[in-house]
Length: 333
Image (cartoon, rainbow, N blue to C red; front, side, top):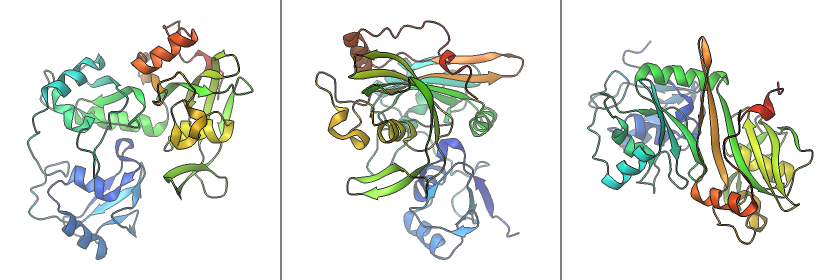
């Protein structure tokens, strides 16, 4: 074994992102030119194979990291750097978004439109605001999973390293249940069931998107239940993803049902924009059930964002908690 070489396993919070962005987050002192040289010479590998800066990582992948002298890495492989000050308005916003907090975790109701992590043209994102959520703790909380930029709802943060490891293990085991609410164009039939359709990334004229394809895709499974319909025009669905593919719920509803999530032009086109509704994605991570040893699961729920609450009022839907959010899926395997 080469001295100083480390192997890092990708957790759920880092899945489905480019390798160079992963290095930027975990090794901020490593410049792009130096990273490219390490990739060209095969010193950085993913699952034992050579990789490129644009290689997509998935949870469970193993990244070989060679010795990186001069970065001053800490015990977790990150170059220590002080957290930049958080803008006062952003700090107030994320603190107001907290829906649950204990010694181990924080749950947010993430606003729609707020990216969880940064990118080449994204400077304002949740990851740079986390210092505002320390409260009385010594450590800055860390992400353990992600939501799409335009998806709102329950997002978990770990308040220390052990909590991050435990939560990451729960996400990998699929014992942690996630439930989404969506407003879709049309009414699926039957009213309840399971979508089992593999998804693969494809480059299209409109950019990269997920496509349902049995030949090349990875298995993707979503349970669904119709909660209420507005005639034949729109439907309120509860969705429970059993796998965690990129854009899984959006691709499944649009491509398998033919009933896209309202506001989802990427997958639904013009049909996703019925007249009278705000042209924003109507997909919300409504609830998350966190198993706990010797106790009932911790169920966290997030109120609808303003644009979805307005749609529910217009359609006469009642989003108020009425019992077990997961009840429609009690008999699902």
